[in-house]
Image (tube, rainbow, N blue to C red):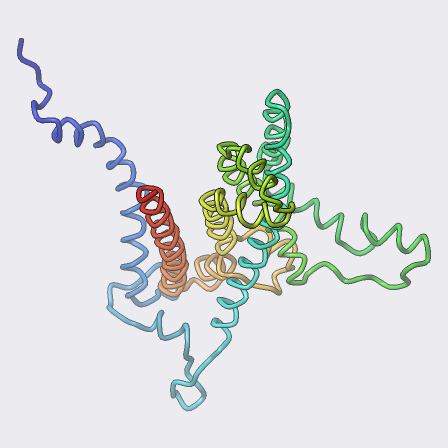
Length: 301
């Protein structure tokens, strides 16, 4: 009996993957192409773009025109990019420092308790990110949860001024994306053969040596995946910088939103988006190479 399905295995495979390719093309590739094209056009004063080719959006990242209409170096946007990378790296490191012990602790629990602890880790995702970030204003703000008890006890007289700072943004980012660090590390640690820890102990290795020589190398894929999953959304974060930074500590996400809304400079916003996309692609390439190297090492073993 004849069928409409292709006979070759490769054709059937392509046919089965066609829906996913269509979705990726429509919702990912086409928008990125549009942003790339917009970044090489001129802005329309009332929003949108003009169909005139220009590199001004990328030039504006580094230079500006002075009163004599000459290009001079402007470090303003570079400082915002640098701050975005700094805060993203800081939040990633904090997530790793907090998330690794949490994931390791969950792994050591009996199997019937692990699911409950993972459930607790994922609970924050059930609440809107805006509400969760706004709660930190009550905690870190003037006369908030931290300051008020210290003032009542006479430990401090004035405000600690924790809000509207880089530290407040880093705390907000760490809290927002901490589960994305815990879950991949837990997935790696769950596969760990704990007989290796017993063998290391039999060879007179203390806990720290066992951790550095056995546990961390074996769960490295989870650590790398967690760092990538945290770093990528952090560098494009919008809510935490706006609420906890008070609009004074701009990051790339806030700057892109400002260009598309208030400034109405779509090409420059698109150029910033392409810069952000480049950072994400570099991070993914790093992860892919690390995963490939890991697979080759396991194949040799």
